[in-house]
Amino acid sequence: MTIHPSRTISVSIDRDYREVYGFASMPENFPRWAAGLGRRFEKSGEEWTAEDPQGRLIRIRFSRPNEFNVLDHTVWGVDGETRNAMRVVPNGTGAEVMFTLLRTPRMTEEAFAADAAAVERDLKALKTLLEP
Image 1 (cartoon, rainbow, N blue to C red):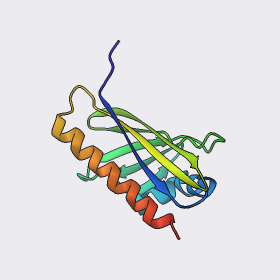
Image 2 (cartoon, one colour; image 1 turned 120 degrees about the vertical axis):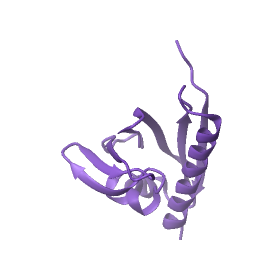
Image 3 (cartoon, rainbow, N blue to C red; image 1 turned 90 degrees about the horizontal axis):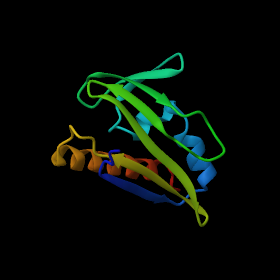
């Protein structure tokens, strides 16, 4: 069994968790706040295609809307398959959005740090969009 190093990055958003989840669960909204994932999103059956930040074509499958506020998504790109765990949970009258980043064996420490910084920027962009 292999356990990869991980880092959970979160942001508190001063807005009802159901509204945060409702917005964040729509793949059409990802280009508005998730620059680290990609751009030029297009629906293709059950999946989406996009360009990653380096301009390479990727495929993305998002979890279906669900009562548990799970926003998991799988990305297929030049580095293979990456499963991303993301959740929205109630935090008082607001929400906590959490993303767990895993460091795969081929990922350098520098690349892991850069990915973590990109996730943090994206979550802050989501917060800026959704807070009053």
